[in-house]
Length: 287
Image (cartoon, rainbow, N blue to C red; front, side):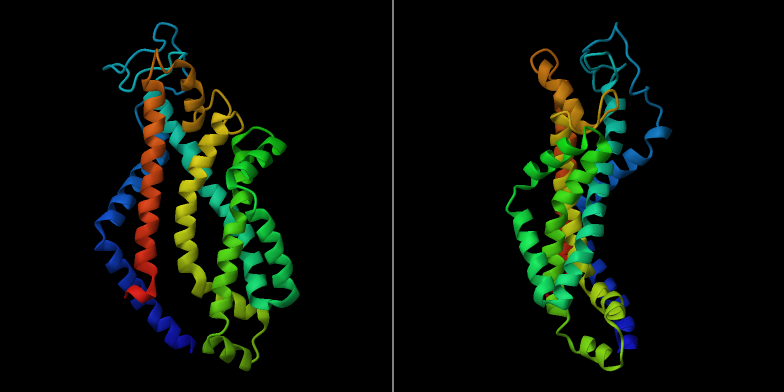
């Protein structure tokens, strides 16, 4: 059983990659996400200005050869702050989803595998959390924890946790009825071994898709929290905090809001397109 499963896995991955490569939209999404990811990672190596350096002679200057994207209310180079802000915004999306996965998947796995009272208790808890709007929950948690980027990531991750609990539970309930799970029980494997070796690997594809889509939602949530003063704190840059400042200068310096707004739009669109492409590629019914 395990040999057959191991033999099929590479072929399934090959088919998924082939289908993904044939989707122009998915490749565009991957290119957008890859571009912003590389930009964030390469920020310390790029020949750009110090994002925290102020200049009282260059306050709110329009885009020019000296400052390609213009300057902000303190004369700081917006291009530099955009690049370094990408690190905070993308990290918020990825770390938040990692927190949601680390907390939500084990809980959903227990609910779906054991059923009964365990499932009922976890499901009612999840329903209660899902009854509250995602962003409202994140704002409340961030306000309780205190304003900082790390606290914002924790708040967003915990707010997204119920999504992964419900998804994992549903996938596990479908997988645990398969013959190979019954076979694993028949040869005397314990619950932990069955869950980790047979159940969890077979529910990874939908979790990957949901995680990709949730990164986009988390980036918007981080920008919203930073806009409200609950995320990245000045003078450190993030796209949301840049928008928070830019709202005061829309008529005098519209470029201050234009660039971070466009960056959020494109990176969120990239993750959404990438998630749709992964969903099509990893769906076994499409092969």
